[in-house]
Length: 123
Image (cartoon, rainbow, N blue to C red; front, side, top):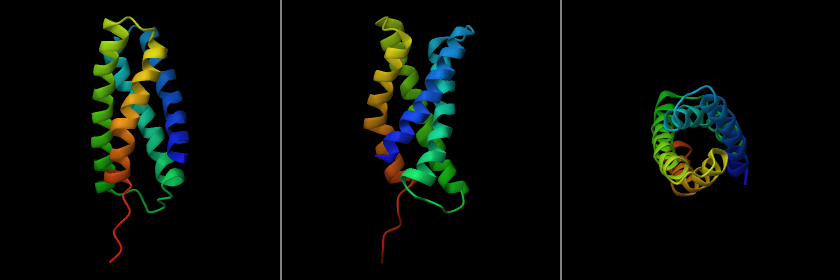
């Protein structure tokens, strides 16, 4: 539940950045990639401290794993938006919301849960 709420807040940041970037003349795929990274940074902080209750200090390995997940998700979003918003001509915000839901459910949440915020196994 909290991961979903963090995703909603991060997606809000992401969508706002996307609209501003596209409105400034940045291409949809590039704007999508950049906005997704900004939203991902927001989601990282909310997921780390709220959703997954990980109060350990941010460390390089965790940040590297998150970076991998975030960049992968941003690339998936850029490709999805190229298809949905550009080729299928779905309005940008609607396309973003559909693509974000699919990428979140199939990649971002599972990868964050298993790779970034995995709890150590009890011995």
